[in-house]
Image (cartoon, rainbow, N blue to C red; front, side, top):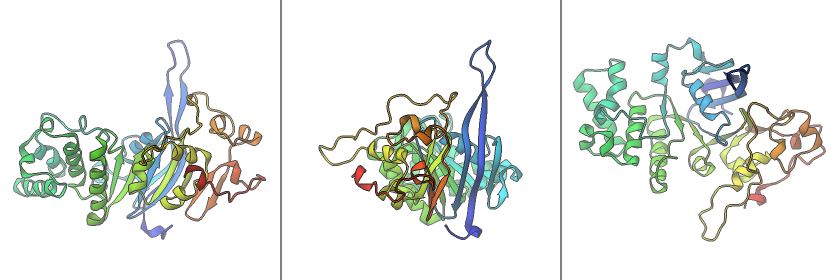
Length: 336
């Protein structure tokens, strides 16, 4: 990790629970969407946050954006607690790029109005200055000048996502939070959007938090990866280390499920089973043990502590001090 002075975003034991009604005559039940997440993001890094649907990734994103309060724990941006930021000022530091470019753009507004809205809300520059900045930004994301007066329904999916990127970057934020930014796009367009985001990272000195269930997309862009399962980060490491030697059985299962481009290659069975655990009735001990092919008796009883390694950690009994297993098992051959 870099020096703490360069930490731009920090999460410390962040928890978010919801009270959910399960029937008219039943008491409300607590749903633990995020359960004690800690993460330190350094300026200029690209963190990929991966996991299956329902693991808490988007809930965590809403909290970082200040749109959902944490039940407990602490989130700081530029060493200032999130709740101390005025939402107006926070939006100048953190901007989102959402999943679906078809629903995230107002169909009644022109592209120029959509991209220029943050400038108008924050009263930055005259109308002429705002118009100039919007046209410059549209050019930067690869859209033609005529897009300025167009409406979203006149653009393709890839062009709409470029508009979403332009709107996010028009205020020159420090952090861009991308929530599944390419999942609604054709495969042929996905790499274009990812490469666009990578280019802007260098040009505008951006820090990214990339939320995705697709490890192939994250590998293309991220410098570090955090793997979430049922509200917790179960493994984190720099991208090269995690792909070369994934340690947690869940991480290895996710990597096995990635479709490889080589002709004739089949998707390997990740051995996770078809049934996802009931979030209202979580397993005891390690939450992953009912789906884990390497589960030991201790996994059913005791939650694992974090075993640290250079640049990251893993929550798994295979690497705990009390385990008799070899903590340095090389699992890279299993996913080759």
